[in-house]
Amino acid sequence: MAEYKTVRKNAQDQFVEKRSRFIGYACPVQTEQEALDFITSKKSEHWDASHNVYAYILRDGTMRFSDDGEPQGTAGMPVLEVLSLIIAGYSVTRPGALAGVKYFLVPNPKNFSWMTVVTAMGQMFYSLSIAMGILVTFGSYMKKDVSIEESTENVEVFDTAIAIMAGLMIIPAVFAFSGGDPDTLQAGPALMFITIPKVFASMGLGTVVGVLFFVLVLFAAITSSIALTESAVSTFEDELGWDRTRSTVLIGAIMVALGSLSALGYGPLAGVTVFGMQFLDFFDFLTNSVMMPIAAIATCLLVSRVIGVEQIAQEVEQDGQRFRRKPVFNFMIRWLCPIFAAIILASSVANALGWIAM
Image 1 (cartoon, rainbow, N blue to C red):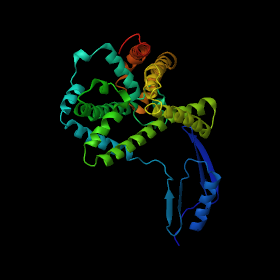
Image 2 (cartoon, rainbow, N blue to C red):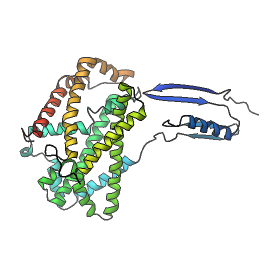
Image 3 (cartoon, rainbow, N blue to C red):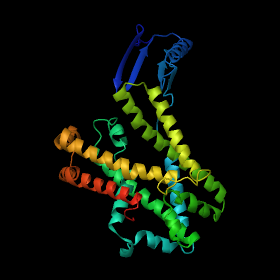
């Protein structure tokens, strides 16, 4: 009988990595049933664990393993992106849609003002998740050998590409189905729910495609909510010492309450407005144009005046990684970003109060 190495006796160990606790067990077994019994006992012991991962191999060559749902990638977002690309192609080929393409892509100096820049900067906060804490939270989970600068470049490229695709999906459709109605173009976040259904209504199998599209949008929103939740939950865990379950339940309750108001704002509560805005538009204004600029200013001051830009540069350059944008980063974090964030904050509040018109 061939010799082989195996576990001599029961053992266990654990460690903490990026706020997650990993507990490992080893146990010698003779049969597959013994292995399954041991796995079942540990699952019962750690019933509240996020994942119970196991692997075993027997002398006869029997081998089993399970990642217990550990994320290996998802198909939802790629499918949504492909479907959005198809809808964009369909929209731009509708009669009258080329006027929308021109409106979207060709600059018109008559429509340009300083407030256009301010509005674009406000959108940038939302689109790139700047000053939400998401980038800081998930950045802390990155492996040390991942290039921060290259990751940033990927975000820039794909975020811009998706934004252009979304514009080509919606703006030409407004011109094709609503004649470029200015009131429709100013509908804000609700534009997708006003215009896209008209696109589906004109398509073959439009009902099926429409249901699929909005279901995928729902899942995209849920995954985005998970990212936002992780930032808040990790803050409660680190700063208040709460366990993950308690933190998640509280944040979930807050999200359900505010999300319900946003949903009902275009239904039973449509007559209730805050500063002339529906609940969804008001929360969009409050987060994008008020809370995030304040957080951005605080972040800039923290990095440039407390931590120091050189400390950040050392983090980016560790393991021999390049930091080609270091001079640009230093200038922007010290001067440009806090000034523009303050401009966004002041102009947005002034517009909401009716002092200026954007």
